[in-house]
Picture 1 (spheres, rainbow, N blue to C red):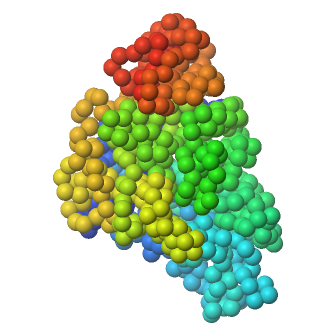
Picture 2: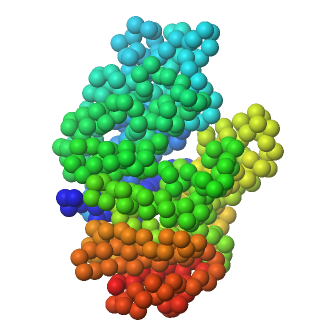
Length: 556
């Protein structure tokens, strides 16, 4: 692949509402981000992925956009954004915007016009249908529970919403919609932004006739909205009209996409996107069936993760590019989901997970607070939750499925999106230094012992470990371009792999268990040939065993 700047980059996701509040209203804002750019420069990241900051009534925390070319009042104004962009650029930090164009808010001017009547000039900007035999147009379900159709009494039809009823889906089959979206994207590019993370971009092309499919539909299932018949045509058109004109970083969030489809979205010819986010490794273990989808699913076991990562690493070698992530604003905290967030093992397992991910081939993504080893919030009261998906699930599971409330609360404590949305933990002062006012969502109770101020000058902290990993990526070509190969494919505890570039080879060893594990003879032989230790999360090492959550990387 052509050497492109984003291949060497490390991306840091900011969820603005929870990052840093500059004016004391309890809500993070753009000026709060600007205040913390020095912190991000110290960490060493190259790109900020900015979750939506556009004008929004905030039904789904900004993913319901009412004006793509204005800023949400909670976050400031366009002048604030311009100052942040300018300062970030002066520090060598790129800004990647969150592009949400599968749907808009129902308060967007396009939809307000669209719903006026069946003859509205903007009617075909959205997906309207008559009911069938006095029922809904089809069985499709919203990703946020319930039907994906909402009846509009004024115009006498239903509109499609794959998410909240306040998020009507755009009709991408209408060329006027595509033109309007591309014009908006070009406007942001001319302003100077450096890329787009594209929200559920694999859902923009619906199947002709909106068929039910073989089973109950859902906005996230492959038989309805995902990876539709014209999606690649539309993204190639977007690439021609916008993306190819600027040196951008682009990543598409692609629920329902497998390896073969990913090769089309993230191909090497540059006709679509640089990379995609796929969801297989965060979708739960296949070893245990779940009754309620994500809510009672257990995390993948290490052997499942290893098999999945290896599939993606090998399948995209030479023909695509991977995005690498453990968590984000839609996922629980990775140290709680895949590691061990106990006092004894939190730091070790956080560093081990970081090692495992950052030495894979692809572009690494760090979610705010991950570099501190922030954990799930484990909130006990449903009143503390703010996430629409979590609140709808609680209501549905307790009222409709008759699941005991304490059992459902256990599901939320494990996987609710609000686990990732509690305020960033800056220091041990009130509200973790996030805000002088009452935060919009509860601060994690452990902020006094897990915070940036505690870690930034500690060379043994999780923060310092991430800083080392990022610096290594910037200095070692093998971390970017080396070929991945798996070792010890049947070991129940150790994830071992190599990266090879020319005569150089990295050996990466990660123990996902809380016990000491003997190292296999074939790997011991490699260790004995090693030139040096590149990074490790213990102060010493042994070629005979890996200790609990130990991670070590050798240059062979």
